[in-house]
Amino acid sequence: MTETEGNSDEFTDLRQRAEEVLRRRPDELSDMPPEDIRYLVHEFQVHQIELEMQNDELRRTQRELERARDRYQDLYDFAPVGYVTLSETGLILEANLTAATMLGVERGRLVGRPLTRSIAREDQDIYYHHRKRLFETHELQVCQVRLVREDGARFWARIEATVARGSDGQVVCRATMSDISDRVRAERALRDANERLEVTLVELKETQRQMMHQERLAAVGQLAAGIAHDFRNLLTTIILYTNMALGRPDLPPEVTQDIETVIDEAQKAADLVQQILDFSSRAMIERRPLDLASLTDGVLDVLRRTIPENVRLSLQGTGTYVVKADPKRIEQVLMNLATNARDAMPRGGELRFELSRVKGAVADTLSLGGAGIGEREWVCLAVSDTGTGMTDEVQAHLFEPFFTTKGVGRGTGLGLAQVYGIVRQHEGHIGVETELGRGTTFRVYLPPYGGEVEETEAGESADPPRGRGETILLVEDNEALRAVGRSILESLDYRVLTAENGRQALAVYGAEDGADLVVTDVVMPEMGGVELMRALTRSDPDLKAVGITGYAVKDIAEELKAAGFMDVIHKPFGVDELARVVRRVLDVR
Image (cartoon, rainbow, N blue to C red; front, side, top):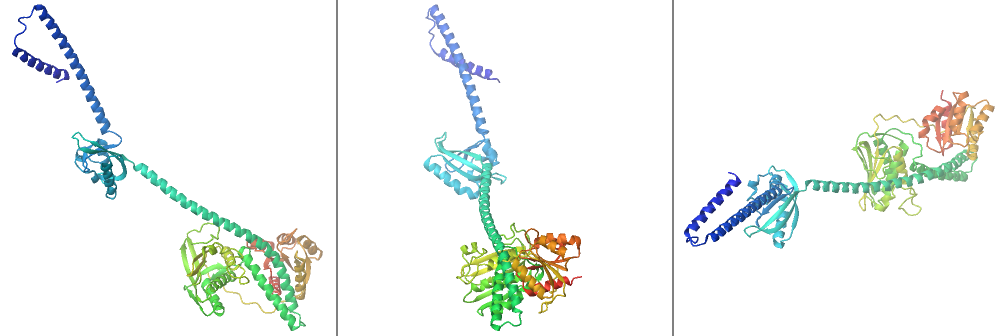
C-alpha cells in the first residue's frame, strides 16, 4: 500500500466519524434561509481545502523528519569514532556500528555487557578511575587504555566521556572511542629514537674526548721523539767515548770507577729515551713468535728477587700462549705494571698474573688502535694487585707521559706511557679496572700467533770481534759521533773513510776506489742513507751496508733491505754492539 492510499484511508475514517457526530446533533439547517445554507456550504468547502493543505504540509514535515532521522542514524552508526552510551554501573546501553566493529562484536551483543570486558586487564584501573571521576565531577574526562577485540587482538584507544540524562531521566555516560594505535606507535618510535640519539650523543662525546686525548698524546709523542733523537746522538757519543776510555790498560782504579758511573748514568738516560720512544711508538721492535707464559714465568723469577716479601706473587693460566712480539718490549710491559702494582701496595698484598684466551670484543681504555675493536680472538695478560686503587681523575691521565702520583724524585711518569706505546706497536689493546681501596687490574690484549716458537740464538762472545784490515766508509752528519765511530773502528783494525753526508760519501767512495762496507746514518741532510746506497749499488751491486739510526725503521725495512742494508744499529749503542754487527755483516758471503 502506498503512502497516498494510507492517507486516503485515514481521511475516510475521519469523515465517517464526523458524519456520525453530525447525525447525533439536531437538524439546524431546516430553519436556515437558502442564502445562509449556501454561505455555510462555501465555508465548509474552504475549511476542507485548508485542512487538506495543512495535511499535505504535515506529511512533508513528517517525511523531512524521517529523512533527518535516517541521516542522523547513518552519521551515528558510520562515524569515524565509536559511540557508546553507558549506565552509571558501566553497562553498554547503546553503541554505534563503528564501536561494534572496533571491538569485533555484533552490535546486538554489545548492549547489556560491561565495557570493562573489552578493556585490557592491566589498564582496567585506569578506566575505573576515569569513570569514577566522571560521575563525581560531571566534567569531561579523557583516558588512554588498551582495548581487546573479541579475537584477542589489542589496540590503543582514547576514550572521551561526558555525563548526560537519558530519555527516562537517568544519568548516563556518553563516550567516544578513537583508535590511536598508529599515534602511540609513532610516539613510541620517536621516544626510542630520542633515547638512541641521547646514547649516540653520549658515545659521540666520549669518542670526541678520546680523540682529543689521542691527538694530545700523539703531539706530545712527536715532540718527545724529536728531542729523543737528538739526545740519542749525544748519548751514543758519551757511551762510545767512555767505552774506549774504559779499555785503556793504564787507567787508574778511581778513574775506572768514575767512568763506569758515567756509563751507568748514560745507560739510565738511554733507558729514559727508550721509554719516550716506546710511548711515541717510534721505537724499533723485533717481533717474533713468543710464548707469553714462558716469558711471564721468567719475569716472575726476577720479581721474586726484587719484590718485597710481603707481596705474594702468583701466575694463573696453564698452557702455551704464543704471540708475535718483541720479548724485550713485552718484558718491559710486565716489569712496569709489576712496579706500579708494588708501589700501590706499601703494606703488602697480592700481585697476580693471569693468562687466558678471549674471543669477542674487548674493553679498551684508550682505543689504542685508533679504531673500533672488532670481534676476534685475543691472548689476554692480566696483572692484578690488591692495592689502593685509582680515582677517576687519575684514570683520566693514566697513560699520559710525565703524569705521576708519586712524590718528587720517585718516578718519571713514563712507566705506563711506555706500556701504552709498546702495546700499541704490537697492535694490541689495554683495559683498566680499578676501585679505590680494592686494587687495580690491567688487561693487555695481544693478537695470537698460530705458528711455533722459534729457537733463541746463542749468546755472543764476551770480547768484541776485530777487523782484518777491511775498508769501511763511515757516513754520519753528527761530527762528534763520526769522530768517535772512526776511532773505535780503527782501534778494531779497520781502515776507515768518513763523510758527513751522502753526497760527500759518493765523492769519497769514488776517490778511494770503493769500500768493503758502508756504515751510514739512515737520516741525513742533502742525501740520506737509502739514496746513498741506491747510488753506490748501481756500480757495485754486491756492496753491503749497515744502517745507524735513532728512529724506528719498521715502515721502511723492506726499502732498506732492497737498498743493500743487511742490519741496522739503533742509537745509543756501545762498542761491543758496533763491533759485532760490523763483523757479522762482513762475514756474510
